[in-house]
Length: 196
Image (cartoon, rainbow, N blue to C red):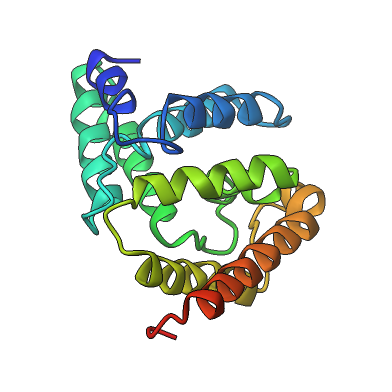
């Protein structure tokens, strides 16, 4: 990890998108079999840099993170073919959609979304961390926006593009998301949100 990455993941506004998230992603990658060493290195680099820039007030975090990865990897002596592929992988984490046949993209996106399929306590801690990161957003607007975002996952044919992650986590992820959306709707009704 470079000093710039270390500083980025230690930023005080991060509650979920922190060094702990990166370490959890790296641990999941370590458990994946059948990857060549060059492919494993590409995904590892993409994990390290995919949330390097994380400012909840911006809409271009992934693009700026990809640019940072390209600069940093070039400075570390990696060729443009490596840094370019890492940047491409990072950009997939914006919409979490992956072209058919893109094994490394499917793997990165699935690892990034693994928290959605965690046990309910881990999922709730993740959701609370995200809410804290968006503390500047008023409660009614956050509830409506969060419900819309999470509904896109439920509407997808599959949350996890990697088949092994899908088999292991899809059912629980859908249950967690459904539970969160219901809780958001209940809170909105209780509070009489005008945004609904």
